[in-house]
Every structure is written in C-alpha cells, then in structure tokens.
Length: 106
Image 1 (cartoon, rainbow, N blue to C red):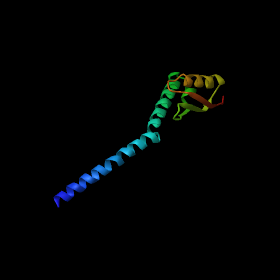
Image 2: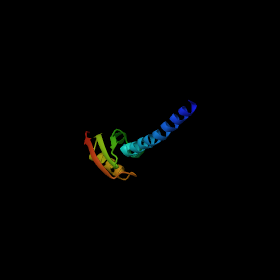
Image 3: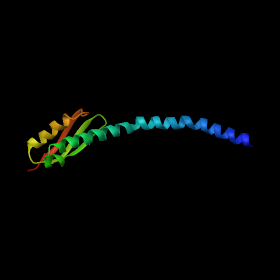
Image 4: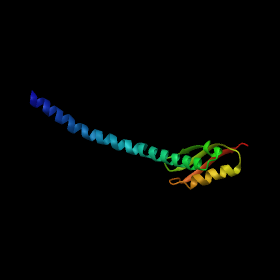
C-alpha cells in the first residue's frame, strides 16, 4: 500500500510540472509584462507633468498602451499648456508616440 501511495504522488508530480510551467508561460505572453511597462511609462509621464508645478498639467489624464503610445485627455486653459503637455510626454523615456486629446477650456 505504501508503495502505491508513493508511486501515485510521483506520477502526479511529474504530470503537474509541465502544466504549471505552461501556465507561467501563458501568463507572460498574455500581457502581464506589458501591463507593468505601461504603468511605469504612465507614472513617468505623470511625474514629468507634475514636476513643472503647473496645476493645469497635473489634471491631465494619462493612458499608455503596450507599445509605449500615450493618450492625453482632460482640459487645459491654453494651447501653450496643451503643447507643453505633448512635449513633456514625447520626451519621456519609453514613450513612442503621443495622442493629445486635451481640450482647451479657459
């Protein structure tokens, strides 16, 4: 009986290892890594906007996709503020493109 239990445990262990490894590989390729990269870029852009100490720039919403493309949205009082937000964003490490949908609202 004891040999049967040991053989069963070994069989289950050997069978389960490929399943566990396959699950880890699927998680990596399903975008878990991209999510971390996206949040890092988003945080960098928000920090750069906040570093300018302009209240209008800190209220801009920032979204980043897995390719480093950043979308800006929200409101700003002038075209200069909108342009500054785009300039700061495109010069942030990891950003590949900027789509600026910030509306001018004085």
